[in-house]
Image (cartoon, rainbow, N blue to C red; front, side, top):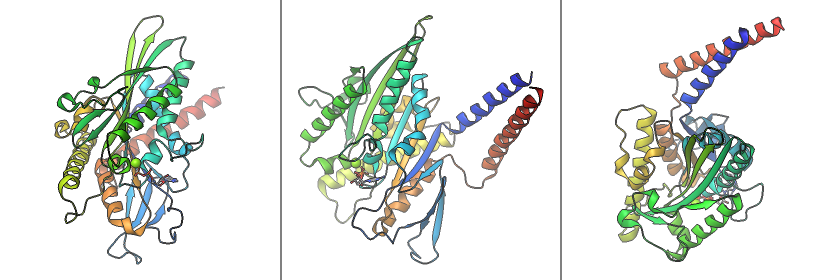
Length: 374
Ligand code: ADP
Ligand code: MG
């Protein structure tokens, strides 16, 4: 009888955690660039969940501001540690959930490092997307006697509100006129992580071909790797479908108004518009508002089915520790705070945590009671 109550409580506890976890925001601070003096970090302090920044007005004196997230990763956090807190989402894709993982931050703050890894990839340095895919194939292999999985991928780029398919094999096709549907982009069946790596390389190559300066272009467009998973239960024939979008967003830096003209200005306006549309969508989901403004950008339109409802969202916000980027760091953290479900010292946050605390206490006392019985 105790066992049953314990199980029910654990289930309830997990559900509560689950509810709380539909939108998660993790903050990652990259290390100082090699060769830069590193005694002047704008990050004064950080722990598992809170980061304290020295604010510009009183920089170097006592001005500071703290931000709380689901998780904070400092400059020494490894790719493995970062992925450990991402891993549960991969399992839920195979269970039929839709998942979006975003990398947000100004250019040079470490978005591509988190998602893909550094230019020279090693087993230790590979990023979230490789780890997610190898996990996906590993778990599907473990489950193969029960569920037969089928995996396919798409890779697109959104530049100036136009969608481009990066997995076209021989020519670059511009999907702009009907680019709203991801289903229009090539869907390629894959059976291993190395298949996906090959496709990602192709996507990178296509991305470079279509632009004169690949680095500049890549920081001004969003790139999205989508993994579709379909699982069929061997005995019942029931089908589960899930998908995972891995999105390396355009750099969030604001372009100097006096400097931006012509193409730069147009790019900047498109980026601003789509990043703030994404922020609006996630923050209205976080606040459980009835109207969610998906239609304000291509990105949110494309990802509509994977944002909100049962879907799970993880946003990695990246910041650089250098003083010369402090303005951008603060605006990144403010964006992150807006999309976060972590509430600072409000009644609601306290009430929620009290509920969880109570469940934890019940579980502990039931466990103790169970131990006494045995
Ligand atoms: P973004 O994609 O946001 O423009 P990058 O991922 O390209 O930024 O990172 C900029 C530079 O900093 C790259 O040389 C990258 O390898 C390095 N870097 C970023 N994050 C880390 C990290 N956590 N650890 C070590 N190097 C990093
Ligand atoms: Mg990048």
